[in-house]
Image (cartoon, rainbow, N blue to C red; front, top):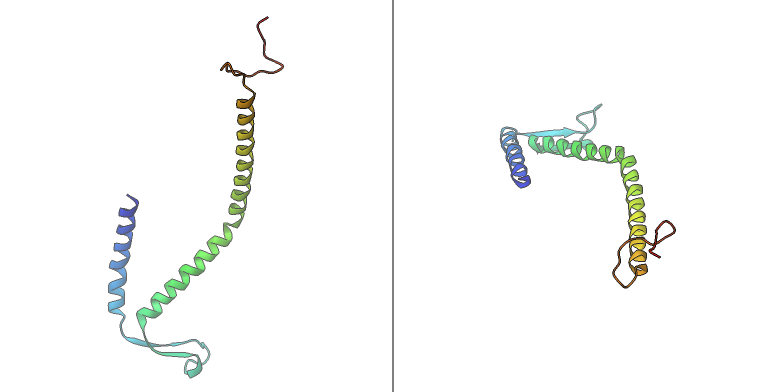
Length: 121
């Protein structure tokens, strides 16, 4: 089911991106100097417009991903802490279970023996 949804999303993206790239094939000059657009040192001449569009989308996705990753740092830290705590409690439970199985009598009688248990006299 997940792969089907993934394929549907990828197909939808392709249906949008292919016509966008075909419709925007003409070349443009990308000027990186807003004060002097004719400055040849900061101008990328003759690149297809769809490259500019796709590059800006890619940069936006990367910057957005970094921002989301940074905002979720607190939750990742808490998850690491809870994971360590859970591992500690699992280890302690395993140790107690092992101690209980080694302290059981050989007759196969099950139950806890301790200060609160009664024995037949």
